[in-house]
Amino acid sequence: MSQPNPTPSSPAPAPKVDLVRAKREKVARYTLLANRVGYLFFAVAIATFVIGFAVSFNAAVSAIVIGSVIAGSVLLAPAIVLGYAVKAAERDDRERGL
Image 1 (cartoon, rainbow, N blue to C red):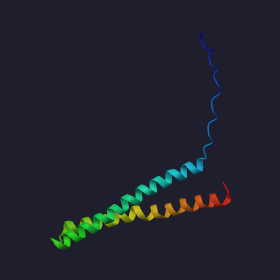
Image 2 (cartoon, helix red, strand yellow; image 1 turned 135 degrees about the vertical axis):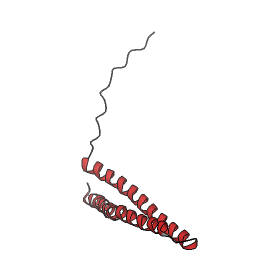
Image 3 (cartoon, rainbow, N blue to C red; image 1 turned 180 degrees about the horizontal axis):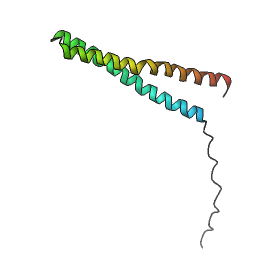
Image 4 (cartoon, helix red, strand yellow; image 1 turned 60 degrees about the vertical axis):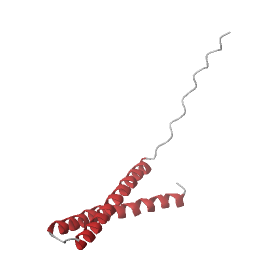
């Protein structure tokens, strides 16, 4: 005996996507990446300074330290501000029950 063919059921409705929250999540991912890379630049600056101080502090060491501090600052300043903004917006949504 053959079994009856199951009738195709209607597909499950697609979940609603909140575009604002999706964009907020994307910004949060980028700020996390910028934070990590920015702090990495500061770590490079500190390590280079310590090594340069111990061995020989020359123009190349100075350029690496200054460049790393500038790059880290350029990445970290907006990333920290945007990170706090995303967290505040999420907290506000939770408090309002959205």
